[in-house]
Image: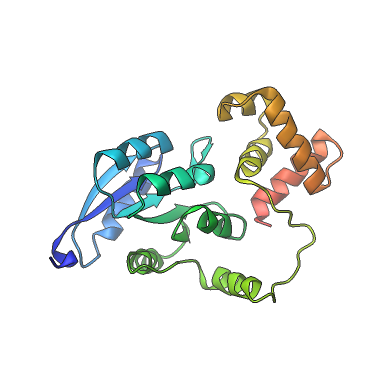
Length: 218
């Protein structure tokens, strides 16, 4: 059967209704009809993926206080045949490569033109990877061993990024532990690791480093 005659099953994962409405309207421009489902959390997304086939998963990274980056492998495992396109306001320079490594097929900024989002969707549906031209050049240079070495850009794990984002938001260790469903001791271990990697010798300096790291997308 011609795939163009079969509706595209789209799952939108975003905690803002206005964004979900906008995505539905934009994807209505595709030459293929779409059927939409919408959820606001990773847990709801995993449930939805078990209930019905999904061809395209549109995922925001920031779902309230939840960072979906660490859940990408589970989402990929739950829907191995789906194409996953991250649509987020978080900085591409910081998150795009990590998302691709974790199972995403593309990364597009919410600030992009509507035509860019349509192009990104069509690209990932065609089985290709989508990032911005600037990020693509960075990734290609890195793959070729020609990328500039950035001394102040440490490699952080998905969990460390979650902790760092919450530190930047001013959350206490206990609040972070409750949000991430981890022990206070585990969060303290992550924060100590972040201090070492970011060169912060005090909680105040870690906060400043976290705000700069997350805000500037190093």
